[in-house]
Amino acid sequence: MDKLQTYLTKAQDALKNFYTKKGRKGVVGIAAISLGLLYLQYQIRKHNGWLQKKSVRDEHIFITGGASGIGRNMALRFAKLGAKISIVDINEIALDKVIKEINSQFGDKTATGTVCDVSDPKSVKNAIQLCVNFHMKTIDILINNAGVVSGKQILNNTEESICRSININTTAHHWTVREVLRDMIQNKHGHIVTIASIAGWVGVRGLADYCASKFGAVGFDESLRFELRATKSNVKTTCICPYFINTGMFDGAKSKFPLLFPILSENYASQRIVNAVLQEETVVIMPIILNFAIMVKAIFPTSIYDNMMEFFGVSESMDHFKGRTQSS
Image 1 (cartoon, one colour):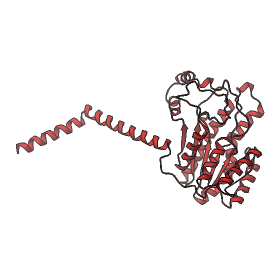
Image 2: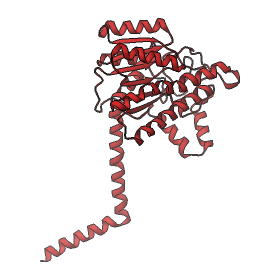
Image 3: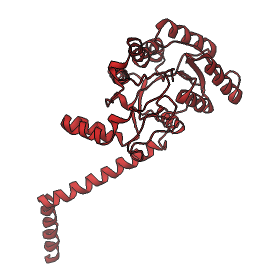
Image 4: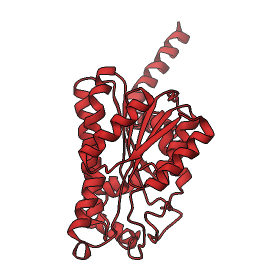
């Protein structure tokens, strides 16, 4: 009986200790560390493409700006996975070349494409109809990848160039999505991918028109996502927001701290995007560290955010820009 009483007393003391401030802190601390480690593990698995992936075999994937850069690279990767590829681009020579490259590697009818001005809704409509007829299949995955950059500060830019940036980088997404979304909703199957930019979250000197267009692309994706959620649609969305990629589009752009903010390789960026689509990720910021800049912007006073951006050289990154102006 004495032993039982001793045991009950110890158990009672343990419970009291648990509910003391010190005990609660210990439990909360352990729980926080455990959750942090689980989140880190998840991010690592996601980043490396180790999460469960969906199949895209025989899926019809439509890529704008697919004749060069990450568009071409994605087309080749998806074709390797057994997808039917449709590519549109303004550059006819490069377009024909990549279609031949895909068909020579993966079969004669794997890829098709046509010249298309994505800023023109009639051109978009005609291009999509041609591709649907060729593959005899509606579009399952739309990748809005076409983009341009002027790299000029606002007073040095032209009206034509500013309108071109907005029309191709933002407005064109409305034309492509409006052509494919009804079929996706009716089929209860589809995926819309927006290739935006970290410039859709962070303003950069010398990129006023580009940032405006990419902020628009990020907003378009988010609004579309909530429209689909409201109807409990099975159509998925993914928004990709990378740092500078070495496709030539941002040639001359510099990173003050390349170890922290590296210029991304085309191969890495393309594979990361393909993994994001296969894993049905919602928003992808790359490299991951740039999530910190977005957090600082959301939480701290503007003066702290501005000083941080200047310290890390973001304001200087476009000072030696050369680039290229064709769609990418």
